Length: 60
Image 1 (cartoon, helix red, strand yellow):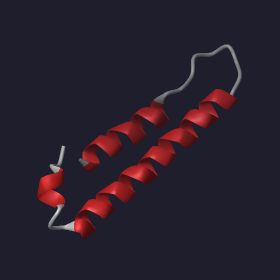
Image 2 (cartoon, rainbow, N blue to C red):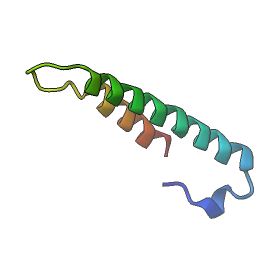
Image 3 (cartoon, helix red, strand yellow):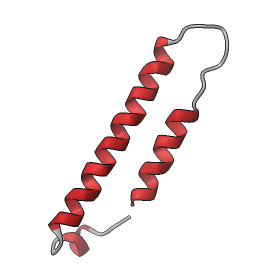
């Protein structure tokens, strides 16, 4: 994880990372909502949620 102290001198980079993380979080929430709205007897497909979470981890 990136240190906040390291980024205090570079607010543009900090807010860019924060914004990218927010977009990926929203993508994960959309995937979760779609999964919940699908009904059926089959197990849920977590692929989209897993992908969004991994991309978010790559930001840091």
